[in-house]
Length: 69
Image 1 (cartoon, rainbow, N blue to C red):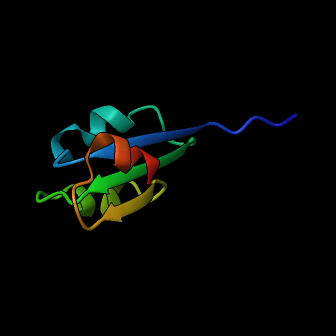
Image 2 (cartoon, one colour):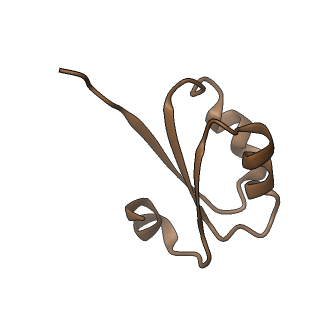
């Protein structure tokens, strides 16, 4: 039986923490749900972490709803 593990990370204005959070996760299945960040979080993910699957919410849903998204 094959086991698939995904890391789901919900962010909001998290640009300064991305490198710490994603360090060591490259090569894994990572999904980031961004809660309508106003900083450069989305641009940083698209530029430096192309291997991350990014879901961009147009509103801040909070952690619970963002995680469910």
